[in-house]
Length: 210
Image (cartoon, rainbow, N blue to C red; front, side, top):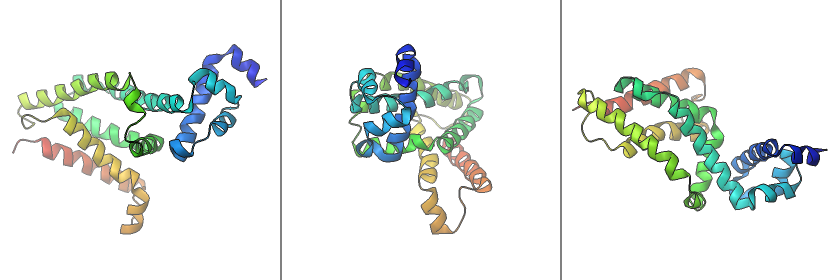
């Protein structure tokens, strides 16, 4: 029955495979993930995976591209251009922190791809294209802040965003070890709220003119 449904609705089949692959790759990494398990999770014949994606490598790259596309599309909806520069930065930091918290599979995928030194995304024709507009958006916010006198001059938009992502990423990717080391429930709502405010103040503190 599943195969008949798959033939009638290829888009649905591809989505089932994508979601199953996302779970399998984020749980087990590229090396530990198995196409058999992805097929089982998706409820499809393994041949369907090779039919639509060609190889495990190609499927992993597709999952990575979709993960990047998802976060970039959500960022685009923030409409930062319509906000004052300081409010735009607050909104970006808040979004980045909460997105990583709510989508831990994204961090796990990135961790794994870095083990392979970006071997897969180097083959992507989409990744750079989807990041160029985002880089321009960061540049626009920073330049507006500089012109209004609320941000320091000549902030590199790429370095800026890496820092925004970093202050969220390290805390969340190491939340269980840090909680144990310091004897605090860092994944509790009160701790998360406190950390988010800290992140916003750290980023804005750097941006403010000396």
